[in-house]
Length: 460
Image (cartoon, rainbow, N blue to C red; front, side, top):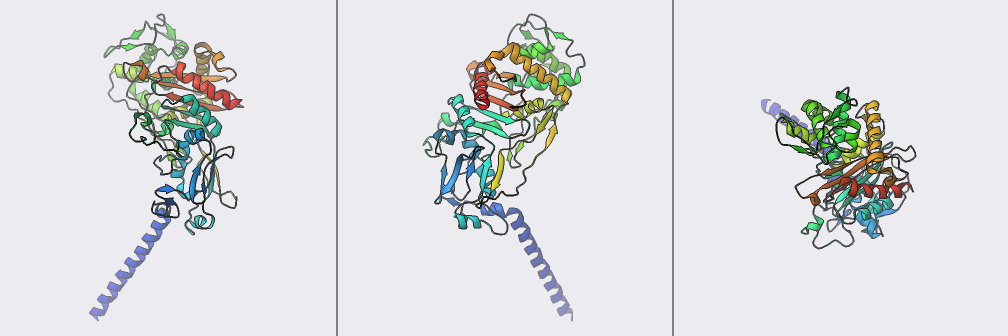
């Protein structure tokens, strides 16, 4: 009897383990099935390590960016388009992890838990995808960069739809260079510089310092600061200004003229606690997720026991801060949109091979980065920047609000990172933008004209 009891217990244990194993496999299949199906040894989807079994990718105007034809993945018939949209679409081997072919591979192939990749077997390709980007604007942006390393991003700050996302260097997927992995010309070619680059923000960061000042220094507009070409903190090294601003300058003109002396003094007065808090509220240090699937570099900002000179350098954007251009694009979008940042999106919709829209819900949310009053004040100052400093005539008809930045990497000004970011204060054209050019010398002289060229084409 004892032997029978022991055997019974043993069988119960085996049964429980069997059921637990089935449950584990079922859960794993539900949660990881799409990842298993996307493995490169799946010959329905890959050939020689290249994705072939995916649906067609269209731009916002229904131009084909990638498609599968007779078991081969084909890309746009326009060479410039293949280059300008490379980092959005992705490369055939999915080395560009932020490309939609990589981020949405299971949806593009039509994988589902019930039928796997049956669409591939039946139709030879998966679900189709329509993007929010305009390939013509991307082409114009790519040409404007003219082979220089950098990035251009444009977004509708009301809807969050990304209209333009270009990263350079790029390459033609139909004619991959032999020296792609060895030439300095293609350094960082698999990086989407809009999302993943780690840039010193330069004077564009003065927008962050200005927001912090508006929210924490009540009489900020009534005060003036001294600038004789430099500022010497009580402790630390001298902070040089870009010019001698005549000994006295107010807050509004300090932003327009990008006065390092003034913003260093403001940052020191604010202190690390307030600067840390504002940077956090604006999303610096946190990743941005696009269409619920593509993550940006979160950024680096942390002041801890900082000496006065480091506080000053940080306040003018020359400290240890590192951000991705998409972060600055989100900040200026919020300024334009009454302090609210809407979630960024690059996917318009999906459709199956029968042409029916798929019920795929993409995340949409709105986050308040600053009060509407603060946003209104910064918007007014950025408009003043263009009118009084950059020249409204250089940006005809754009109602532009902007801030330039020239981030110094070393003593050679030819190595500077040129920034220009802002938005159009226009209900009919609610676009925010960011332009970054590596080895670009000056933000206003190098990145500014590029922004004008692309925005003029966008609204024409």
